[in-house]
Image (cartoon, rainbow, N blue to C red; front, side, top):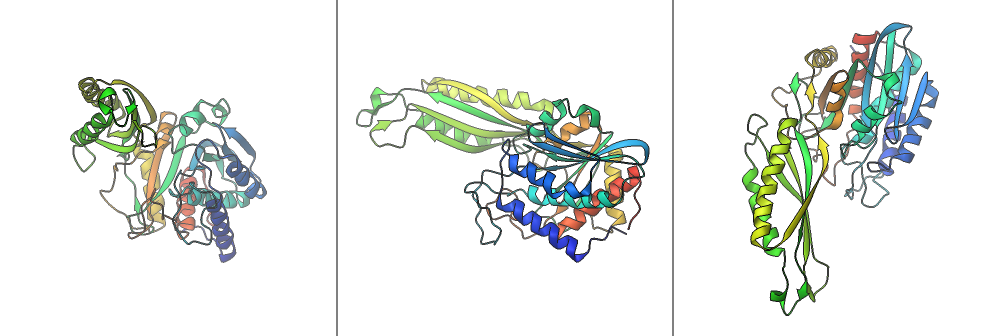
Length: 388
């Protein structure tokens, strides 16, 4: 039992997804993507269109006939700073930027929902379709919730879907409780003194300290499966000195991502890593400063909300993947749990497909009607929709 999308509708949605894919915009820069959303869905006739929400976010509001709850469905606008490696006819036209997480597909699933709501309003309450900015930097959800324009549409229930390569196509994983880790970016800056390359002893190079710190980071990794005691520290970037031959480096910067199952445990892990860095820096006669970035809080599914998603999957006769969650990845959708009953569902993008954030990833168009159907079954349970 599901909503039917005819061949012409699917073709139009796929073409739109391919258009979005060609013109990616990274977090905080989603101006044209937001305009494209408003333009493409203008003919669905939402009762309210909210723009510049939490930055460049867009919310489409569809009112029901009778009073009832507010249900928010969320997708993401932003792409990644990755150069796409593919021969697709619709590959990214922007060097160094690409939709390598499938947010173009998530937007298209939401557009399909908007098309149905344009034809048929909920029986009660209201549906809010949120195209959220800046998910990849963990700033988007926080900015949306803090925006005064969000208060009038504060939801009672919030739902999101994320595609997941490695899971069989259109299989789903959903469960109550924790589904993602908390994570935080840590940047460490080491400062010494440059020297002439022929007299390195007259300077203080951070090279040895960088090597020692990188090696020591692996000692913080415990466990392969997310659970009690799991933590992960991943090196993401190193910069040292200038790209020249006559000067030894006088400074270095190391960036890393820290992960824990619980949000509250992040501060202790940061402190432990910084203690190690400070010890190495002191032994190598370097000064050290640091900064933290992109704090993703753990995403926890409300049991009742997760059950609504599970019922939607049952109605659509979708196969389940048991024991998949929680995952190591992070998502800023968890913040919507602070104001509503929220749940996220993972939908398989195929076992042999490249992983998200790989340079050759591409969202499978086959998931567009499946994801839209799941969202529509959520709205049917909470707001009442007739399947047409």
